[in-house]
Length: 326
Image: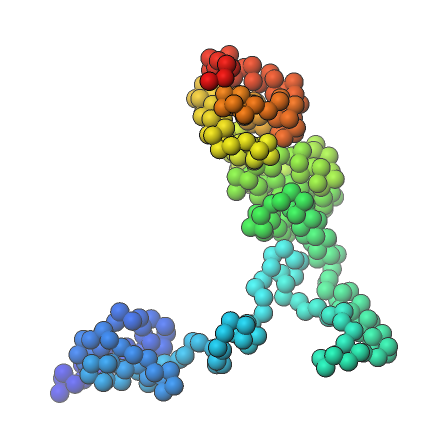
């Protein structure tokens, strides 16, 4: 009698675990210990294939309540919306009224209905923003999208930048300051955090704000939000610069090796990382027989030819580099 009670208690425990989603295929049958369990979704039963024990007769089918025979049909029957989008002020949760001129049957909409839908769209756009703060957020995220697209910044980095800007807006740090400068600072911080090399000059050109203003906004935001960023390293810029100059991976590896030696001798500290990277690329291009002029290297790094020449001479002198082609 006690054995039957124990078995009933085990079955109840299995049922309880199944209802909270803890039952796994690796569990055993409480009657015979077999792991060969089958799920009958039509009867909502979990059955042991060895002894036939119905372990659970009320488990929930987590799948869809419709059938699809190909991917196209499956996409049409899915009734869930798109995921939240942090790149829009409302995170993509609001609805939009379309601008189509035909109904569901393909017939043209009358002029009266067109006028009606035009007014509805206008009221809908106005009702999207509850206050000026939300309107400014929509403006800022639109500007962020534009800058990120122009600089070919990945979407994941843009999303990080949008979250940083939302924190800035929530803390009230935008008040009295340029929205464009704050957007540029957010994007610069996100790029630095994810080791995606973008200089202040590049962001400044795309944001149509001075480099000085974005730098000031960046320092202010970093101080207020407690963001600590490590200094940019020259080797982070090497892949992008070599790619823009159409140089081989051999040149890239050689430049990274030169920068590693320069870092060990502390030649990179206190200097602009882009100019050091440009000088190393110039040296490696000459050594590997793929020489690019100092002018072209300087243009790819958004620096001056004189700066590249000075850094190149310092590296050659300190690292004892012979510029004769091997």
